[in-house]
Length: 584
Image (cartoon, rainbow, N blue to C red):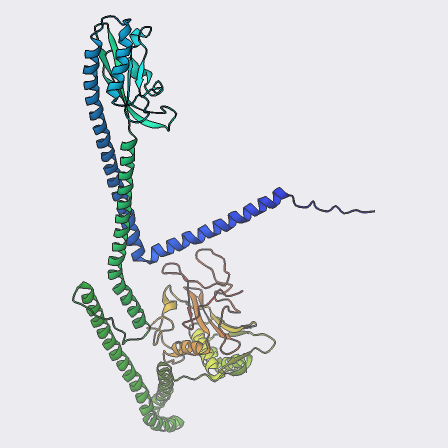
């Protein structure tokens, strides 16, 4: 028989510990969110920073000033109390000396009565009264003959310290501040003054105990008043700083919002100008800048429109004479065998240049349509395998002429995507043509891949490659890596620019990688379904046989390597989508 042991039920202590941990996590999360909110407000709001700095600085200043004022008031009250006690002590000592000089021996019978009467007289009231000034006479040198007397009759031993008694007994006037309880009342702070009283039979000691409760209450009221005034002043300064900062920050915020609207294309946005102060001058200057900017942008847009229209009109107007020249050139080219060799060669050159001129006009018309925003995508489900075969067959003659072998790496199954077959074929024709032209008689490899979301084609050559920084220029119009290099295909210089626009029209990417001596690779990635957004590509951009100068892993990711690194990659795609890491 097999018995399974069940876990012990949680104890009360474990449940309590779990609850404490949960509470601590909740408090930590709330604190982190609060701190994050405060930091965000501090970074983003100039008004918050100014008000906070004003409050902190004014709090320190007002706090220090309040401390000095309260300390000064306390010292003044204490000095007044000390002055009053010293005057009383001086007068009391003279009076007591006159009374006690009537006796020459401390053991005389009437001396104790005289001491009692003197203490009561100096106390100035009923000896049973336990509030106000306390007067005490002691005779430490004649303790066996003279008993200490206190008026009012309360125990003062705890208030008159031994150090003070010793100092007065030695013949000096001394004082101290002590806190104690007299007659069972509350603990009170007392100012204690003691003075020796010389007599014929020796010295007795006179003490005045003055409560400082009234002075303490007055000082506390003064401190409370100063603190309340300081707090009100700090809050007033904070409010004033907030108002002043708001007066300054509000136009700045309005200017920022207006600038954002201007950057978004709303060129008619302006700031409201009110008054004649510096902020009004700022608003007026901003509006003038916006007006000039709008005027310049409109002028540039008009110039761009006229330029595009000029290009389009010229391209269309050249069609008619080009057709006539083409017909004449075709006739001459057909009859070239009947001419002498020089004229025949001229006919062949004329035919080739007319072909190139016609391609240039076609590309200019296509570019003008892209610039004008009139390009239309005719998407339809298309198998890209036959498209790649058609491009390869069309460029086979050129490849054979320059000694470049075109290798295909295509799936055995159809690769279906919703694309415009005419535009995709044109992009591949441009990429493969460039690869053949710059292949340096080395093989050019075309690879086709797909996944659930995208299709991709890479064109790899092993020619001279791209220098650092050239991957940013390769898609510019009429750009050539080597201006002195003769074109094998008679291209127009607009092929890659049109290819980029075709890729963008599909919502795809056209990316380039290259390194000196290692050739180059271009990758076209298109969404499998029209309108989808790309996140990854089925094929890597960096070739598997590439040698990275820094020895890093070839994980197929996009490279962004600056000058001096020897390799680079550039992704060109829609403005709202950036290429992600390509999967191997």
